[in-house]
Length: 101
Image 1 (cartoon, rainbow, N blue to C red):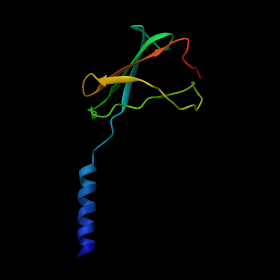
Image 2 (cartoon, rainbow, N blue to C red):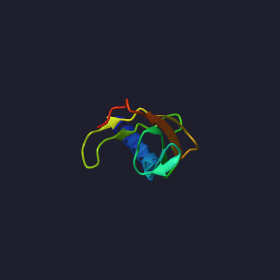
Image 3 (cartoon, rainbow, N blue to C red):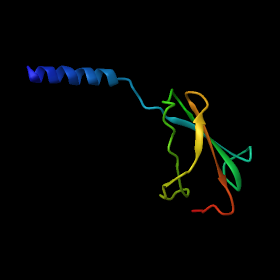
Image 4 (cartoon, rainbow, N blue to C red):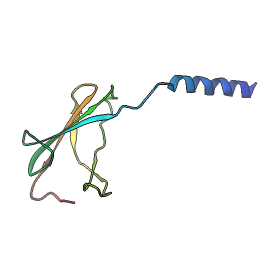
């Protein structure tokens, strides 16, 4: 009886997750002092993350960065908020006192 109950529970859990895929990041936009760009520079940097499906707006994304082609995963200290259920926007400041990789 315990085995049958376990199989039924596993079947239900597997059935519920069928077709469920995790959201994918589809676009990243950078703005430096309000001007779109593909590189950052001194000033207020705004980043927009667009996902392909609805996200949990209670949780903010964690953003890692590093040198192109290198594995230097550093956490970006960015603060932001959800603009809607697919678009998150955050900003941070880069000054002459900011460290660089």
